[in-house]
Length: 254
Image (cartoon, rainbow, N blue to C red; front, side, top):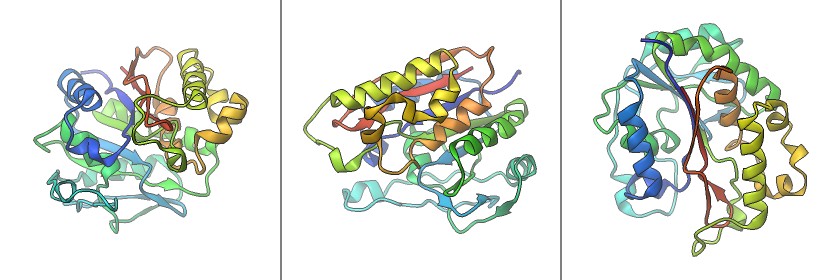
């Protein structure tokens, strides 16, 4: 087997963990069609630390890091094993990394993976987002992690390219014009591998000011772009915005 794919997934609402919809069906399809990994590394928007942390627990806990949702969401059981071996590989590839098992697998991971690998039979570990790192540094860490693809590790960045919860309209199916504009700008740059414009997203103009207030949902994308190769085949999945100000657009490199 050659290298594993790498995937940025727009995970959207935590309710996607329990709703059978157009997004979750695509996640299910990806899991059924890509090669089976030996382990899954997730860089989730929901684990931000000072510096970079890697979880190496053999039995990572499920983190229900969302508030005010229906009881059924907190009853979801998704408990894969961890992979200390692969976690240590990741730590060796990055600089100034600490081992930290105070977190676990958050909904940026399990809300998607329970559709991709419903039997929870592939080990999962997470690498945190350094909240003080630059966009360029996030991209370079993705480049550093790229060799894991040759070790049968599926690298997933989980977030949302547009993520402005203060502007969410729960009754809206699509996106506001500025949300679509920013999403399309990033898509065009990704398709043409103009990654500098994705790193320096302010080049998108006024739409970038509204796309998000903080960057933790955007930054996981940069890891996947860094871990991609020019020779990879790119597939764009769930190409849309929803609820006005959330992008579900996802990028799969194979």
